[in-house]
Image (cartoon, rainbow over all chains, first blue to last red; front, top):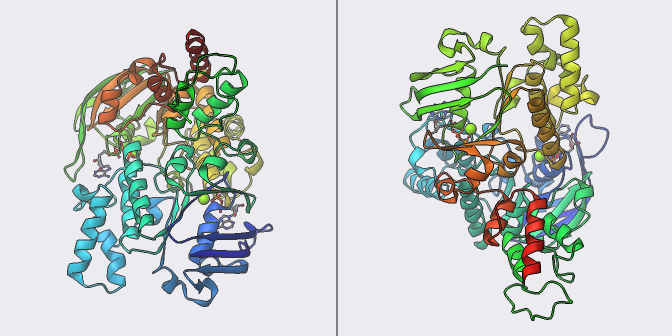
Length: 294
Length: 270
Ligand SMILES: Nc1ncnc2c1ncn2[C@@H]1O[C@H](COP(=O)(O)OP(=O)(O)OP(=O)(O)O)[C@@H](O)[C@H]1O
Ligand SMILES: Nc1ncnc2c1ncn2[C@@H]1O[C@H](COP(=O)(O)OP(=O)(O)OP(=O)(O)O)[C@@H](O)[C@H]1O
Ligand SMILES: [Mg+2]
Ligand SMILES: [Mg+2]
């Protein structure tokens, strides 16, 4: 669904490239998390897939970016955005301000697509419901809490039904329940074939919702694999990415003989609990393990 | 150093939304307090009462001996520094240095004192090397720290941080944690609003839990984290290690050392 072939991109006036020789294939329906320190190029990667780089930011793009069979350089941005929805990090950059209510905000994009009104209203209602903001429908988008605004921003993209979703820390201001709801909704969309690229700092969420994790650093892909492998990789901290606290704890526990020496480090809380609950961790112990963990 | 007091504060936005309901609490000088609770629970609204951006619909807010209704926002700025949830909208100067100097200059500090405060704030936020750059040329994460530096440089006895860790990488979160510790060590009061409960557990000794505009819980970490049922009502998940300890039926802990000790002991007993 998304193919990058040796892609480099340099912002205007920048001396070093923000993306440096990236080659990637992301399959349809995949949830691909992108992690990495500040300045790694995560947002730029999303801008490049969406066509904003170079169309909006100018600068210089080399290599090939193909999204849903379209080479981005051969299509105008106006056409690309119909297939590829980009949710910015700061919701205030997304809310158009052209509309008075939360209900009208997502409808704005649909009107621009020329969607018939009755169909449009039903769609907007569904998305507001999905994101838990139906009760706020008649409010002004500017008279909301930070987390509520972030949901409105996401709604205005989801409502367009893009085949590719590029999400730049979409839940950074949401409480844990809201975060789980939004991620579950995104996961459900991916199961209908929507391809998702998700920038996310929290390892716990990546472990639960992503199919694949890419670690960017200095505009290059440093690690790429299943969450289970990448999120416990000892190379993460030197790359400026933190591991979950329970992963860290299991690591220390293993050094002290409190975590089974052969077992991989856990990347979810459930795996951590299971690992510590194994009755026999110490190999010299004579009591048999009765498999509550792996 | 000054105490804070909210006395039966209620607040309704002009649109008719009631965001705070009869909130009473006091914060002593030098406390590090986290304000937590679900989206829309009233955290930002409460914080905006501390520097006079909002006035209570009923009740009163005292910043030391000042009633916020009797003082301008400009005057209150000398007592309460506030870093907004979206600080991008707070930045307007041409260089990081000028941006950070604006606040203390405006408060009327002598030039030498301004220079000293700016230097300290840039150092604390690890921005000294970008002092001459245009704030808008910085990465968003660093721009957020410029807003933080600007507020630190005003040397207010009270500092309020609204979601300071969003968008920060591991190193950025550590840097902000160090700032909170430093402000607190200097005897100033620091109030952190955050959904990053691990950060709150690390750096705030008192947690105030809001839900539906009311205080649901208020106390030290061990007390608050033990009330899973109430936290659940307002969408607060305890820190990762607290949840682990609970699942393993070990004594509540949010730091690795006590948890490792408990694990060691429980494994020895088996
Ligand atoms: N609009 C821009 N103009 C010039 N350079 C930019 C622009 N946006 C980003 N950069 C530069 O490109 C590089 C990658 O930045 P990018 O924003 O993609 O990183 P990121 O991984 O998203 O970081 P963060 O975690 O802070 O969001 C950085 O060196 C940054 O300074
Ligand atoms: N400017 C405003 N006008 C009207 N209502 C508002 C305004 N700002 C916030 N509200 C409403 O007041 C309530 C409390 O909002 P507040 O911003 O204080 O929540 P919060 O706890 O900071 O949430 P978040 O975690 O999402 O930032 C919410 O119901 C919100 O919709
Ligand atoms: Mg980014
Ligand atoms: Mg808020």
